[in-house]
Structure formats: structure tokens, C-alpha cells
Length: 266
Ligand SMILES: [Zn+2]
Image 1 (cartoon, rainbow, N blue to C red):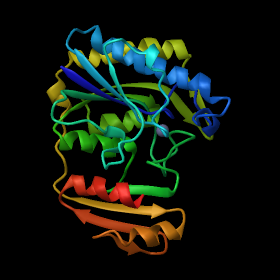
Image 2: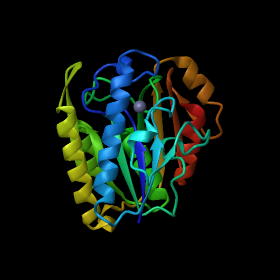
Image 3: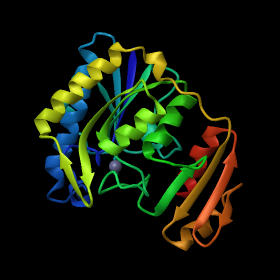
Image 4: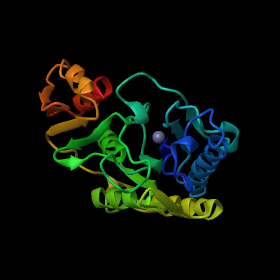
């Protein structure tokens, strides 16, 4: 079976500050290595099951060039940098895959689950889809569902793990950290690796089809920006309506059109 892993960084154990996630800053190096070790642990959990024979890892944070390839299992392929298409953090996923996993994922904008909570970038207050606050996990789970690929595993902060289980009760989640106001409490980095490997091991042994969700039939997307200019410019995208000073809304029955709109408007 083929597994697709979308790897973000803000839900890596120990991370609590933007300086730890930005390439070129001193604090970043340690956490890029821990991010990689966490992806490696998830790959090992998947491969040792014997059921997963092929893994594509999408480096899905910021530059798309964070993971240290030599620290990953020899059999994986790594997708680095950005395609420049609506797929975003899910670039390259499609009908050829049997399962999706998210690692290092973080709580959504407008929530308190992670000191670095945001959705897609830091220029919006929130994104809602059908009234529900949208995390990257939600947007990307719908992308997986669009291609009929079930999401079987997520690691990241505790609040996001809870949100993921609400959406897909049968999936496995591993919380490596938890917010405490503007701070975060996390597991020891090596303990996180053990739990990630075990968690992915459980995920692949379960009934993967039970993690398949049905896409909503229609999508009402609302975005509230931090600056009015973004809403003004976004309102020129076909079908997007301006709402108030800083908001826009969009309606479609085709999820790919949601992705295309987010790609150009966010
Ligand atoms: Zn990120």
C-alpha cells in the first residue's frame, strides 16, 4: 500500500515560538532535526507493519525545505519545495495513494490549542468552512477525501488531535504537546518518537476504509483577514464576495474550487 505523509512543523514536540520554525534562525536547526526524527518514527511505524511498501513525504512547512533527507528511511521519496498549485501541503496526493498521515500539525487560527495557531498563513484571523473553524488539518483532510484517500494518522498538538478525532473517529492520533496560554508543555523528544512509531503501527493495522470521510455536498467558505487590503484584493477573485471591511465569502459545490480560491485569495 502507498502512504502519503504531509509533514508540518509547528506541531513538533517542544516547539513554542516562531524563531524555532524559521529557517536561518539559530533555534531552528534543532527543531528541524526533531521534525525529521518525528517523520522518521512515523515512517518506521508504517514500514514495520509490512502493509505499507511505498511512502511519499511532502515537506509542507514554510520553505518546504526543512526535513533532513538522510535521516529518513531509505525507501521513502521526499517532495520538497512548492509546486505552485492549489494542492499546497498535499501536492502530489491522488488516487494512487491508499492512506494519508499528517505529522507536526497544529491548531487552527482563532483557537487556543497551540501558541503558533494559524491556518495557512498569518494574514487571516480565521477561515470557516460551512461554519466550522478550518484548520490545515480540515482543509487537507477534505483534499484527501476529494481523491478518496482516507486519513489514518495525525500527530501534533493535543487540541488538534481532538479536532481530528471528532472529524474521523477511527483515525489514530498522537499528541506531542499541549498549549498552556502562550506557552506549551511537550513530551520528551525521544518519548514522542516512541509514541509516534507505535501510533502509526496501530493506524496501519486498523480498518483503513473506516477512516474515509464523505465530502460535504457544498462549501460555504468565510475568511476574515487581519488587514482590509487582503479582503479587497481577494474580492476580485471570481465568485468571491466582500463581507464587511476585512472579510470575504465564497460558495461552491466543487471542493477543488475551494482549494483554487484559497490558493489565490489567502
Ligand atoms: Zn508550518
